[in-house]
Image (cartoon, rainbow, N blue to C red; front, side):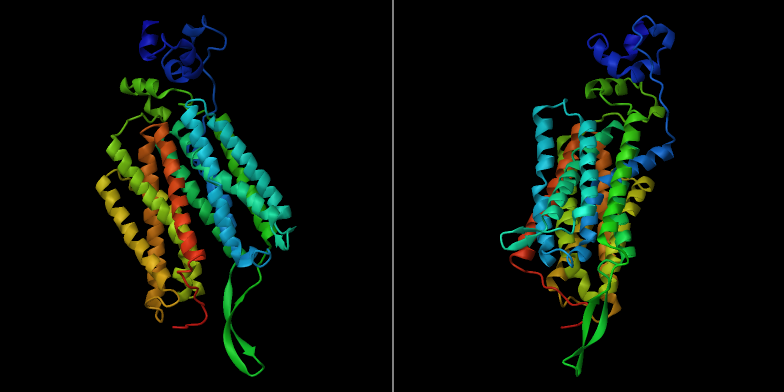
Length: 470
């Protein structure tokens, strides 16, 4: 029995805790079952069905898709919705306010971790959020087109209300889904970010198949005599209702994946306190085959540096530049805009794969990549500010540059976010919680900064993709 206490530090001080929570770590892999028969019939090594690593990566990716697929789907479907809903092209402004208000979700979770540290049930929170998202998306398929008379106006109350619920779910996922991944080894954190990248790519591909926002330049007769080129939007291949059914099934599959992850393959570290995990890691009692990632704390300056780069990257990639994508791309034509929208979403999962093939832990490289993202972001922002007459408008070079700029910017920012998230994973559960808080805060600050510049002060001007007015 002496060898058992050596292998399980803290057993004598917290026997019930180790007995209930860490028996697979300290007992099942180091202690013969026949020695435990005298303790209790419940004190047994649990028999689990181990999933193949490929299956586990697939489930984690599907789980990650459910984090932001709802909001990404809402945005890519806007060209279809603005033609049917009474808000028209003012709808993006309403959505921005709703998504900013949805930060009450992350705030509530953060306060819960602050005042009830160690008592927040992340699994229950995730199940609740996923249930809310599934219900809201299901109701959206039936009621998105309905309006309610508010005073003298017709308002899309059902649509806006359900979008707010989905926004709360997506915003809160950064401080629940991501910290939950601390229960698994670091390789699955990268897979989770890959799923987040796919949450933007899949709705974009579906919108492309749908033909959402596809326009063409046609000659139209004016006053029966003269002709002028006008932009005409084509009819969609299927309705917004079908699109929202696709959203429902994606969220449902993501929720089922999380149920399988939670029930079938129990995380090896769930419930094991950081101090005991660190003692086990220091004594090298954890077998590499268990997929354990030991808690290695970093210095505060290094943590602040990583969080600063992460905040800047997310503010640009999730808040500032998406708000001006149409202004930076549409002057170069409809084709340039659609190619940019698709390839920038493709760059995210590709960058996630690169983090697995070419991992980096150098702060110098992080600083250089951050500087590169700033330069690319500044170029894109300058193009948007110069709209409708950006440089190189008459040649192919301008279109190529804007597409490459968006592609590289999206890839670099995603690479930074995934690698920094992986590093923060090694620093503990609270580090991943702060990672989610910084991601959400950066997105919020970026969006709120651009909202008045675009919708109040009108600093950016629309360009007609069919007419060169310069």
